[in-house]
Image (cartoon, rainbow, N blue to C red; front, side, top):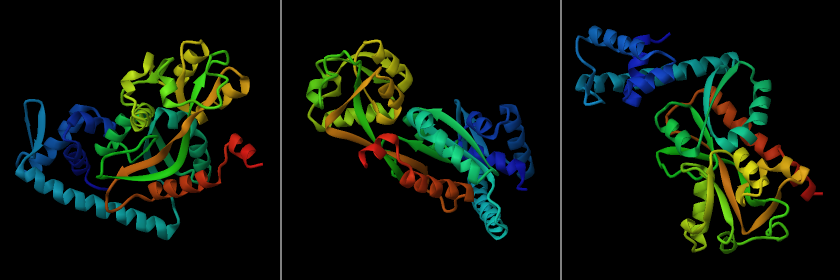
Length: 308
């Protein structure tokens, strides 16, 4: 409904990148450039300066961007108002999730959400926490779900659930019989950790710092990029690791891994992260409300047993 040239310009202006805009809009970069040129011809002036691989708005471009923001806010508000009247809940929602969340939390949640709201199309991008938060900052995605604190005060962070982290080890490892393990005891054993930018890694680093231990003191023998690869390495007896308890339910049941609680316990939030914007699409609101209700009512098997 809105002018396609203005939509493309608006996306490039937000991201200050023709390449990123092409990715977000699912267009080729030449097609994005063509649409911007068409708008520049309409106004008979340049809207962007492109020098030294850097994109900036001209004075005219800043003016067009100012009004385009207002236009699209009003447009989105109009669409949502009409949908509220008609009762229709639809649209496209692009979600980003860190690896642990995407593999172990979101599948069931999004599956149930789609049963309730079949007309909302979902798109999921998976990366580590640092990259997913950057996608929110760059407006590449509508909403992110991450498992680490977010420091950017310009983003809204909404905690949905709390996750317990535990030490995991091979059943024959010398720590396997311990009732709990301290941060000081961890440094004595070969340790397998996540990659830089991982939310799990950052949370563990902060935990060690709180207990006056430099995370550099950990005897890191391997860095891996997913919980699954770390579990495989621990099962092979290559070292111990710290993982979310939700990621190891199957291995605990099979007896291929054991979990040792940290002393004191280590917990982290599962949070929804989004831009601070005046108006949000109805699909985002519905997912946030649904997720909160889901997290409040859903009990993991081990939680049900502990409550018996």
